[in-house]
Image (tube, rainbow, N blue to C red):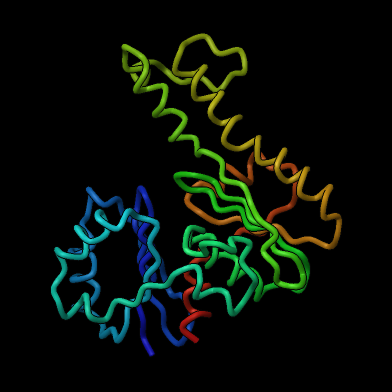
Length: 245
């Protein structure tokens, strides 16, 4: 069966082309640069698609505004998954309201749990960075959410009375203009803080451990992390494939 899968993220959307349960390619676009309707129309002209598996972290109103622009026959083959759909593969730590855990986090854990019998951590670095711990008995112990670099930069951008992006960027710890001060600080806050979280998790759960990293900013996590990481670009889509069976 040939499938497409869509990850509706906060900043970008990703479309995966799946053939016989294998992820062939992934396309990433900004919502404003290329509407999903145009990308899907282009793809579906060239190949038949029986189902489109979906993951979304968007506000329901924003998601519906996107879906309403799609043809009805296309919307009818969309299949959305929720965190509670992942409960057959591991025990969620969010007991009272499972669906308040981001479905992207849950899907990442589903996919990672199929790759190892060890305890594992998944770091997903996009608009925000999520860090989740799954033990070898498939119990989601819990996790942490950190702001991504762009979120931190945007806060400063909004409160300053000038555009600091007009200044030249220099990656020196002794920064000499506002842009460099802010961006170097946001890199430390967004990525080196991950080491503090990992240190604490590993100290409390000191067993055989595999650490997976995914997301659009994975390379920055790898560059700043003190631990060996396993990079899996399409981890969320692998989780969707597992759920679809």
